[in-house]
Image (cartoon, rainbow, N blue to C red; front, side, top):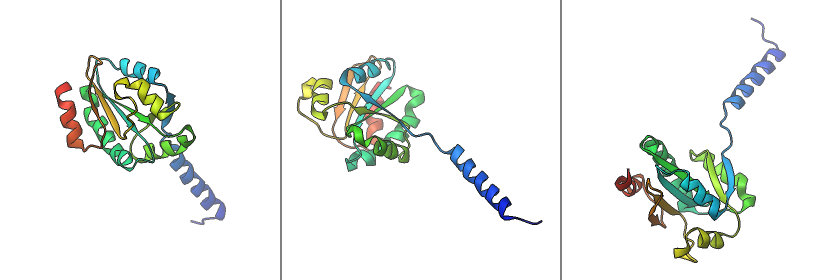
Length: 165
């Protein structure tokens, strides 16, 4: 069999095209206000909702993302829904998407506006407190039942969720 330069080019082009078509789509990043986030949480009524605030510049947050991806896969059939909210600047949208994709996630909200103002309006009882990572858990009735400001292991998340499953 005689192989020409053209045959090699076509073969390489086909392989590249095949890799491109099987690549995952970029994660969806959508800006969110405190009100629209509350609406997104309410829309999940009947599920246990885990809302995790994170940022690309927060090392514990980024380290926790694979744990949250595993948590989502493990508990989705049991009615657990994960909502990620990035505290990054809107100009960091590409970095947010890259960080998510590398750690097993396909979507996140991105805070619209000032971080402190966002948290003051989202969680008024914690005015001025902005620690990341921050996780809120809502029971199936839509009531906020837990808030934590720390990164967690898979086992710690499982223990937090157990009473609400």
